[in-house]
Length: 241
Figure 1 (tube, rainbow, N blue to C red):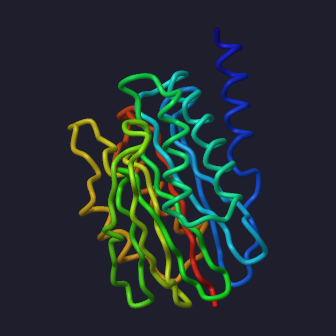
Figure 2 (figure 1 turned 135 degrees about the horizontal axis):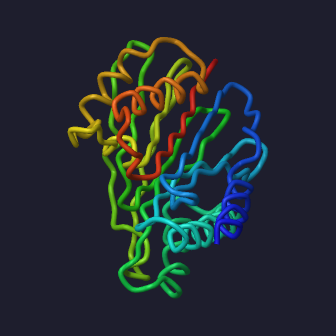
């Protein structure tokens, strides 16, 4: 059984981006740390054409092998739909329709997905029940991307809205799974959004990778010796010029 779990972990690891894409004017970084041998979170970079990139982060209900199998299904479905280059909300709607046909009753997926225009810096996004991401401006102020929507896997005909934000030079998009804000310490105190927001405001002009590592380290220090209770996934997109 352990050998099979190790194999599953290796397969799942290979499903994650093997390298960060080089996008002129942008710095990207991501990490996903499962709570068990395999996890239900994923993040992805999907090249649509020379100047447009799909960027997504998903979180599957449950843990362990069932969540990992559904995660791989969702990631493959999203990749397959994203490359058509249709509107962001239509990509999410198509992904939801396909998942709903095959998903086990009671299971669901939260997904934040958007397309980055590498020329203008505009990021157009849709949100299917996922934690609302932040944009940190160069002056340290935070903007929460408020658009929401129903999780994937419940209603196959569900419609989703889309919105957009422009990343100016020095601005940072921060996307995360609930394993960040719900990380608990020995006293069962969660990391929570307020602590995350204060941390994001305090981070200076650092690389996307340093941004990811700073938040991940703070979450681990908060949890201390308490075992990780959920998958932790972080995705950062910073416009460098």
